[in-house]
Image (cartoon, rainbow, N blue to C red; front, side):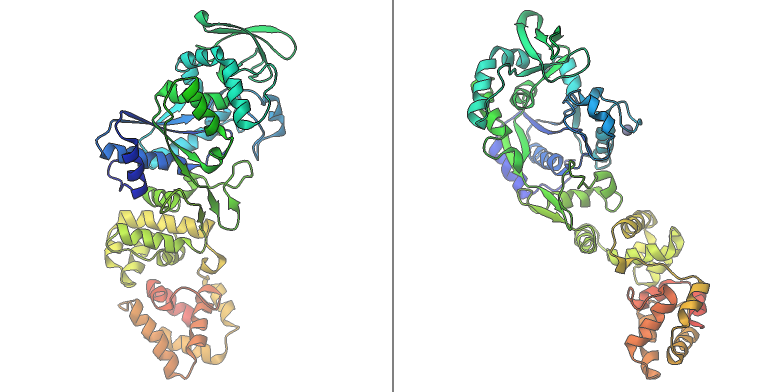
Length: 485
Ligand SMILES: [Zn+2]
């Protein structure tokens, strides 16, 4: 982790934070698909920058697993309505593959973080409550219920309900919401409460039998974990927002210095809009790792400066992004578009891919088989999932090529036959390109028509990737066969 380059903005944040020890926290609710990689990566960059300055740093990902289910995420069965108000860690997995609803969404995200080698400590909030990490701050919050309510009302401009409490005890059915606290017994860390039906019950807040409401929890968490820095998405920091209330609560109630802050902007997806799990506009890190290496994904998500909005283009613009990334990380990069062509031409045949690259002039890349296999997989996955139609290729079968050739005129067919005669296995991409061109000129055929004929019998279309390297990459016998029409 410390080998990652430290971006300038992160260095600046670290310098302003000053002396530690530091606790960098990022947090996300696993109430649906987790896509917010930017938050974790901002935390990682700042943690790294602090470490580079010789600071002691604990870097934490606070997964809000004890949070109540608030609404039904896209794709979740309606029947889950019955779990609204229940802790995500206690709601069943909608697909039945994990221990809980929370784990179902947290697990793949955690896996992606591992794959990216993000060195972060993942904490589940229901465990923190069960293990007593929140006990002291909960007691403080309960003792200052009135002042907390005042702050909430002043900052948000909204009146809190009459029986508002900073603490949400869990009732026998599992619900955290809609209860009224009757009594606080601090020496036993217990509250006596009444549920919606008028039943009285007791919750022990040192054992995870409830949680703090989210706005209070934010400030309480800073103190409970000793947080010194936390990044926030822009929507959390507008006026009257959760950071506004938490700042005052930390200062006036919990007596804890407000942690350093960085406001990052949202990421949107070209053609779709801002990422939002409630709208189902998400890009999952695990899917993105199928088309690029972890460091490219880091770079993509952070952008030049995460305090600016970013529009991701995973379609047409993606090859350029990959090329820019490779130029900086690889001494001899193969253009991504070329990898895409090779991957679609040879399928998973690594030897054939190496041969195609070698003849295309990428000898070094052809030799590094392990890297090549990985890069081809990225290119192939991108071609299948994201590539615009114009970049999707499929070699025609012999039968299909014959069929396609019927539309060509005699001049074009004779041109192809002439090229086929002259093709030889030693020719590289440039030589084949010359051959295709000079043969057209010799025969008085317009190059545009000549190349269209080539693409017609190979790909069943009028255009395609640069013809010379493409044809050179095919087994010679196959190319000759296709040109003999
Ligand atoms: Zn699952």
